[in-house]
Length: 94
Image 1 (cartoon, one colour):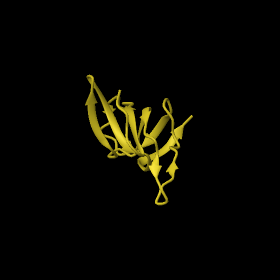
Image 2 (cartoon, rainbow, N blue to C red):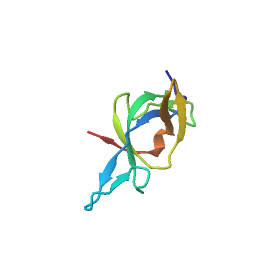
Image 3 (tube, rainbow, N blue to C red):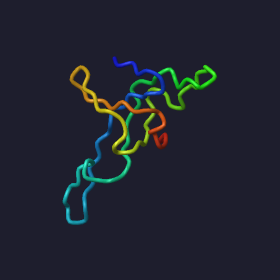
Image 4 (cartoon, rainbow, N blue to C red):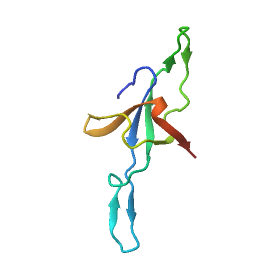
């Protein structure tokens, strides 16, 4: 499995579809709003200027909200993942 470095987080993006009143389906890539995903792996955390590690605020299995254009898409073992910096995460969903 992918093991992110530093403050990076590996996500599996959740695709969403939305129907309009007229029944037209809008794919998630058309919408200009943040996207949700599931945390697959988390790095060790960010290193502060004094050398201490700041632990990540998210953990594996969390559902998170992130900006649409954040991170880099990678393919590993036939699956597509998104690697983002922890600072690009907007919120943890309950």
